[in-house]
Image (cartoon, rainbow, N blue to C red):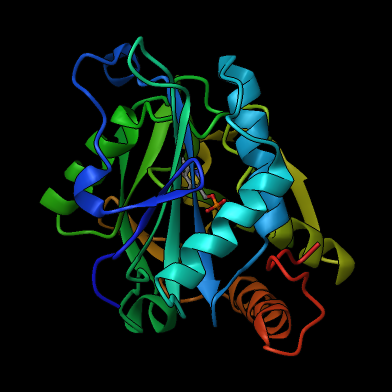
Length: 287
Ligand SMILES: Cc1ncc(COP(=O)(O)O)c(C=O)c1O
């Protein structure tokens, strides 16, 4: 799909040119806002309810009242997707703090879906480590500088993702959650230290339902040579194998069996819940 024709500003459809935030708004230099990215398939957003509840959680962490309740946000999502005749896309939702000239404002718009090369899934993606920590990591706030710098470093190194580390511990990807396999256990940092990714939470749930052991604990950088597998998760990536970190192979340097199993489990769940006849709510919430 091309650029959006309509952007929703607090439920009012405007042109992309009108969707502007003033340089005089202190929210800009304070990064005082929260956001979400949702994957839309056939005009319906996957796990919409989980994304909106995380939006509310992020807003609460930074003390920003949302401009509308969640059922109104559901309506604004349906409205902007319909107006743009959006089928498969990424839906962006920003909530920006107020200034004297404007109220707290939610902007919603569809953009082309993010797609990754198929070989990232068959051979695994390469990554680098990057020393940085996101501010208030449990919140998906507009303060994305740490992620931005890690992504820039990854691009400069010719790899897919930057993995953040701080105080000797790996925490999360620049825009993803991080998982390692040690023995027959899947390990991932606690949601108190990182963003509670919608994909992460689903993967943990699906794994545990299949009897796969998942433990939430800090991941020391020094333990990295013991990892037999590694993968990252996010809305656009789903479960993406990582086979290289800082130029060194993870385990055998191939997509590992637990990663492949979790990838398949997630894709099955995704296919069922994005099927046009799946019992998702009218607003696209998977519930
Ligand atoms: C820092 C960070 N961690 C994790 C994620 C993955 O979250 P989700 O699975 O909800 O997309 C993102 C997504 O953008 C992110 O920015």
